[in-house]
Length: 100
Image (cartoon, helix red, strand yellow):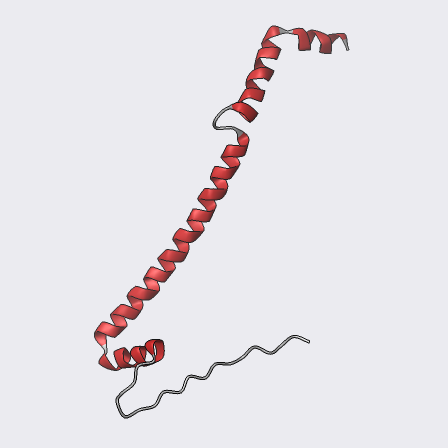
């Protein structure tokens, strides 16, 4: 117990503890800020991965559309519901079953 009191009264120990508390809670780069920054970085990384996948998909579709006229017609019909003058287009929408 006496050794603990001597340690607590030591000016270097007090300075180190004060510095540690200051760095953990009061500095502009405290632990809470670091956690928020890390969370934001993870979120942005996920968005980056999503957009890279979407870009690759769009590039693949563009390459396919540039290479084949039939695929361009199929793409226009499926995505934009385009049709020829003498055709009718029927869009079938499936309804979700109501939960009981």
